[in-house]
Image (cartoon, rainbow, N blue to C red):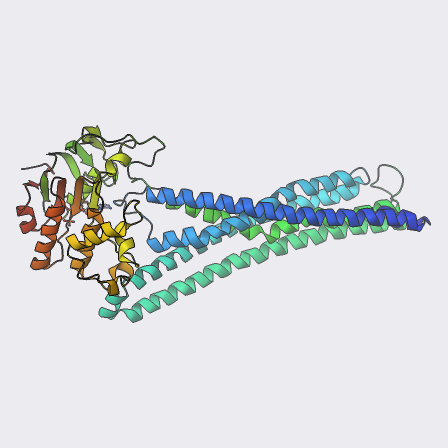
Amino acid sequence: MLAIGVGAISKGGGVADVAVAAAVVAGLGILRAALDAVGGRLAFRAARRELSMHRSAATAALAQRSPLDSGRPASGLAASVLGEQAEAVVPYLTRFRPARMKASVVPLAVLLCILPISWVAALVLAFCAPLIPIFMALIGWRAKAASEQQLAETGGINAFLLDRLRGLATIRALDAVDTTALRLRADAESLRVRTMAVLRIAFLSSAVLEFFAALGVAATAVYVGFSLLGSIDIGTWEGRLTLTQGLFILLLAPAFFEPLRELSVVWHDRAAGEAALAALKELGTSQQTILGGSDAKPRPFVGPALIEIEGLVFRHGPERKPVIDHFDLSVAPGEHVALWGASGSGKTTILSLIAGLARHEAGVVRIGGMPLRDDTVDSLRRRMAWIGQSPHVFAGSVMRNVALGRSGIDSDAVAGALGSVGLDRVFTPERVAAIGEGGLGLSGGEAARLALARMMVDEQADIILADEPTAHLDAQTASAITDALLALAKGRILIVATHDPVLAGRLDRIVRLDTLARRVAA
Ligand SMILES: Nc1ncnc2c1ncn2[C@@H]1O[C@H](COP(=O)(O)OP(=O)(O)OP(=O)(O)O)[C@@H](O)[C@H]1O
C-alpha cells in the first residue's frame, strides 16, 4: 500500500489516494501488533503448560528409579535440571518454535509476491536465502554441543555444591575446606569458559545472518535502482520496472530476511531448549526401576500377610553376577525374622525386592498369596512399613516429620506414637519446631525413634521391613529401640536385616545368608 501511495503521488494523485493507502497501512500495523500480543500471550501459556507436563513426567520417571540404581542422578543435579535448566524450554517453545515457523512460511510468501513482478529480484533473494540456513545449521551443531556441555557443567557444579554443603561438618573436621574451595573455584571457572563458548557461537550466528541479509537487500536495491534509472531493462516479465513495482520490491526485501533475522536472535534458545528437554528425559532413563507406576488399576489386597519367596534372582546389571541367586524364604503371619549375613551378602537387596523397590530377574515374591507385580505392588505396599539404614529427617515440625503428608494422621496419633517410642520427653512443646535439615538437633537414637514413630501411626501396615535399625547405636539405645520395635511389630510380620546379635536373638527365627550360594541356610 505504501508503494501504491508513493506511486500515486508520483503520478500527481490527490490526497484521497494517499489517505486510503495510509489508512490501510495504519490499520494493518495495529492489527499486526494486536495479533502479536495475543499470540505471544497464548504461546507463553501453552509453553508453561507443556513445561509443567515435562517436569511432572520427569519427576514421575525419577520417582520410578530404583533406590538400588547406582546411576541415579545426584540430588543437586536433579534439582538443577528440574528447577533451573528446565526453564530454558519456555523460550524454546515461545520464541524459537514460532520464529522457525515464520522463517519457513514468510520468505516463501514474499518470494511469491515478488516473482510475478521481477524474476531477477526473486532470483537474487532465493539465492541468498538458502546460504543463511546452511551456515546457521553448521553453527547450530556447535551451539548444541556447547549448550549441552554448559548444562552438564551447571548440573555438575550444583550437585557438587549441594553435596559439599551437606558434608560441611566432615569437610571441616578433615581440614579439607581449602581443597574443596579450590575445586569449586576450578568448576566455576570451567562453567565460565563453557558459558562464554555458548555466547560466542550465539554472536557468530547473528553475524553470519546479518552479512547474508545485508548482501541480499543490497543486491536487490542495486538491481531496482539501475532498473528505475533505465540502465537495466531485463528481469521483468513485461516492460520496464515502474516506481510502484520497484518500491514494492525494495520494501519487501527486508521483510524477506526479517523472519530469518528473528530466527537467528532466538537461535541459541533452540540449543538450550533441546539440551534441557534431553536432560529432563535423561533424568528418568534408568535400567533399574521400581515395581508399580503402571496405569493398571491396583488390585486390592485382602489376604492375611504371609510372605513366600521362591527362586528369587537379582543382579545389578546384565553383565554383573547375581547378588541374590535362587533365594527362598517363607514368613508366616506375625512371625519375626532376622536376615543375618556378612556385609554385602544381600540383606538390604532382599528387603528392597520384597518392597518392590527393584525388579527381580527370576522367581516370585508372593504376599498374602498375591504375586508382587506392577498391578499388585501399590496395594501390597500399603500394607508395608519400611525403616531404612539412615531414615531421612526433614527440616520442619515433628508433626510433619511423623505424618509425612499421609492422610488420616492427626496430632493425637502423632503424640501417641511419640509417647510409645519415648520421644515425648525429647519433643516438649518448646522444642517442637526445632528439627533442622537432615535431622540436625537430633541424636542418632532419637532419629531412629522418629522413624519408628512414623511406622507406628500407620495402622494398615502389617509387614515391617527394617534395615539395620540399631546400627551405630550404643548398647543401651539399641536395646530401647529393639524394645520399641518388637512392641510395634506384635502380631505383624517383621523382617529385620541386622548385624546386631542382641536384636537377632530376640526374633523368632534367624535366616542366614550364605554369601557363596546366597541360599537360606536356616
Ligand atoms: N546400586 C548398586 N549397584 C551395584 N551393586 C550394588 C548396589 N547396591 C549394592 N550393591 C552390591 O550388592 C551386594 C549386596 O548389597 P546389600 O546392600 O544388599 O548388602 P547388605 O548385606 O545389606 O550389606 P550391609 O550389611 O553392609 O548393609 C554388595 O556386594 C554390594 O556391593
